[in-house]
Image (cartoon, rainbow, N blue to C red):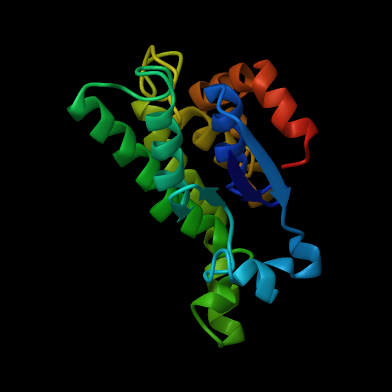
Length: 203
C-alpha cells in the first residue's frame, strides 16, 4: 500500500491524479497547511522538508514531485504513464523538471518570497514579477505542445503535473486563454474521470 501525503490545491495534486490513473492500491492523507500541520513533528518525521507531496512506500519515503511521478509510472504497467524508450522518458523528465524548478519557483515567489529574502522590498519585487515569469514559462510550454498530451500523442505523468500548474495561472494574473494549447489540454484533463475523483477528494 502506498500512502500519499498531500495538501489541497498544491503540486501534490499531480501525484494524486497519477495514482488514480495507475490502478495501484493507495491511500491519501491530507496535510492541512492552514493549520501548519506540515511543520508538526509527526509530519516532519515523515518528510523533514515540511512540504508535500511525500509518498510512503514499503521501501521508504519519496519526496519531490518528479521523483514521485516517475516512481508511480515505474510501478504501473509499462507504457501506461511513461514512455518505455529511454530518450522519450528523459524528455518527459526534462519537462517535469522544468515545471518543478522554473515554473513552480516563479509561482512561489508570489506567496513565499520570504524563503529567498527577509527584505520586504525584495519580497515585493519578486511578487511583482510572478505574472510575467509565469507567462514566459507557459509561452515555452505552449510552443512545445504538439499533440493531445504534454509528450505528444501518449498520456504520461507529465499531464497531471502540467494540469496542476495550469490551474494556478489565474491566481498568478495570467489568462489561460493566452495559451490555446495549454487551455485545451487543461479542459481535456478536467474531463477525465480520474481527475474529477482527485478534485472531489480536495487534494
